[in-house]
Image 1 (cartoon, rainbow, N blue to C red):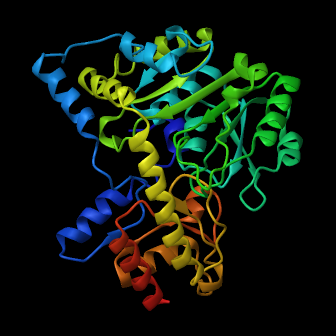
Image 2: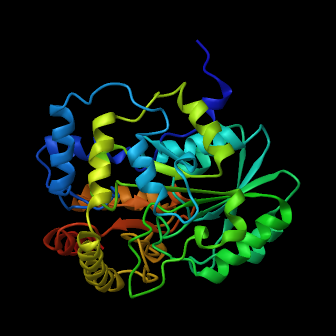
Length: 376
């Protein structure tokens, strides 16, 4: 039996692989602290749980609109000026939204420019669409727009920007987004903006979105998610904001994939939107406090650029690598000797670093860094 060449070029999710590994270690009775999975420690808000239960009690368990429940799409559209329900498509998490985008815009050989380090699934999803990821290094985790401009070729189809960034926590300023927008207009490129962490920006920095730039909206696709903001990772509800022609194409593809997103989970998402921002503001403040706590701990061990958003540290561990070791070897050594799980930087396109999720209870954060310090 021979598998397709396409699937043979694609690696499995390098962060998701930690879930069964951690479960196995726990079953062995090991004391494990996971700082590998990008998941908030908070409970899913009660209004979301209650709305989901009510939807189940009302037997709202049938097929629904392939683009998403109309009420949910209207509520989402209301958050984007000039946007209507025909510009919104609801997906099984923003990961499926991104997969669908590349399937709809890429022909074989098309190139997508991606700043690195970057989230592990970007490149693989481009390859699954027959496209070619083109990586451009960042400078101190900030965009090098000149290098991105130099990477544009006659094969370039799109530029993908993720801010706040996973894995670095970098937040890109409006002036850089404006330069990217001008570059896209000049070369007739699409702009894909992954904004999964858009609310979690710290230190009173302005939250800049490509959607703020009206000139680029006709070539802009934004993806966002309920997972991180509302601790709804298992609900698998995300969405895309796109020009209506692109949204229609994505719906057409979705009709052959899942048909629709889980109906009662979408009712939970609607309840999340109906909440005021008080809870999110509180969670952002708590994450900023955790960021400060974790940054203070990690700075005593490794060089690290202070993250401005999301909930990750991305320290440079190269000074602690044994001869011939990669960041993957280092992460394995730390896990085996200390029971602390981190993600190797090579998984994000930058060896010599690890990603550490600080969205954990304070006692776990302190215990994890204590264990790492003892190993080092």
